[in-house]
Amino acid sequence: MISMLILTDSDLERLVSMRDAIEAVEEAFGKLAQGVVQMPERTIMAVGNGYILQMPCYIEGLSIATTKIVSTYPENPRRGLPTTPAWIVVNDAETGMVEAIFEATYLTALRTGAVTAVAARYLAPKESRVAAVIGCGFQGRFQAWALTEVFRLQTLWAYDISRERRRRFVEEMGERLDVEILETESAAQAVEEADIIVTATTSKEPVIRRSWIGEEVHISAIGSFQPDHRELDTETVKEAKLVVDSREAALREAGDILIPMREGVITEDHIYAELGELVLGLKPGRVKGDGLTVFKSVGLAIQDAAVASLALKRWREHLE
Image (cartoon, rainbow, N blue to C red):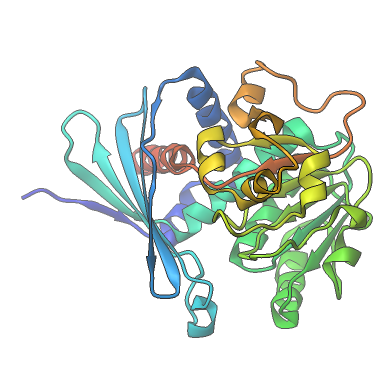
């Protein structure tokens, strides 16, 4: 009888820290830029009032292949459920046998926070001290945590359309992070002094406008990922030095880019680089004279594979 390992969110929380995830995700993006990754296009099904996605991946050099099944259901919090529940099936790369199943709601939030931190390393002003998080749900917490791992933040502004969510965010993260966290009554107020802005929403309409933000600012837009959804207005994207996790995926799914393209304001050439190109040094990140930078992420299976592989390694080491 074949035994199968099952790891829960609480297991993953013990096995992998945010700093671990940041390093693993950065390495994975380098592998992607090197062309040693198999990552078929993810499938997206609209089911009920949400979406169910399947995301397969194999990174050469790892002993496993992974397939994540993740759902996005914006109404779930009303049911006491996470907005983006997820699971990962782990196959042994040599035999194809299913080796493990991971509960991956925590892992998904962890690796998404990690990619924001990686992008900010290359694109944000080096002396960034003020950040803003727009969207104070489960994912927003990991975004705040990730930024504090790579920057010495002094103040973090928080905004969410739900007053209850943002107050809970301030209370919980204020106890956890060594940074002053303040809630605001509007997104405009949250971002007006920010060096780094993260949007972690499921919005269909812009939650950030260019007129609200300063000249030397970095934005990580990691929320909405449908062609008709966006978090940033056209002027923000038009003016920015634009980096994506994957050109192919962004041009297929990222409304933040596709809508300005449909408006005739930008073309595909407006994308400056993929994140992996910055990681490998093929293109420079922020350089002198850069003003606004934007990292648009739709989420890639390499992030899940990298963190899942690390978790499995840590689990095995724990057993030895």
